[in-house]
Amino acid sequence: MTDWRADRVGSAIDGSNPTVLAELEEAFAVIGDTQFLPGYSLAITRHPGVDRLSDLPRLRRVAFLADVDLVASAVENVCSQMDSGYRRVNIEILGNSDAFLHAHVFPRYEWESVELRPYPVWLYPRSSWTSSAYALGEAHRELRRRLTEEILRLRDAV
Image (tube, rainbow, N blue to C red; front, side):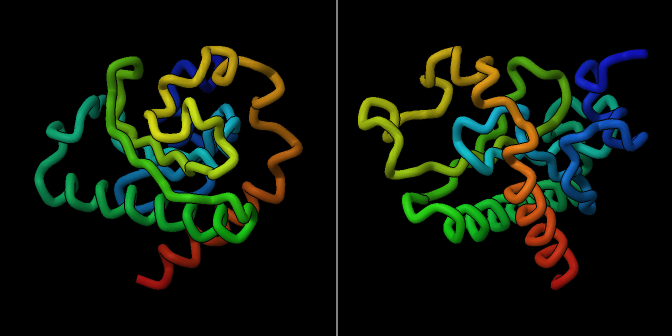
């Protein structure tokens, strides 16, 4: 059996991607595999083979960006309620490592070290991304539940 991580889009479509929070118009809302910044989420394309934003026709591109905004709004709403140290959300579309369209939504917090707080999350040590201490798991059940509820609330309010 193939690991769902080998095809995140296909596994989201077939229902085997355990990080999926909700299906949106042009994206799947997913929670990040690592949670060193609690609430880290992504919007990933619903279209296999779509590598970059410009691969989508303009109307689908705008709809994807609207889905990114929805995920970011949900992350902001939930994280600001769950953590008094919440500061803001950062949104990035990079695509340098994974060949499918996706946008990162990173909550940022006052409790981050002053050496890292004002800079991109990519400057965090590699261990933040790989340590089992930050791996998505049972400890994130409530966070996942609240993110899913908020994403669905915002999606259905449109």
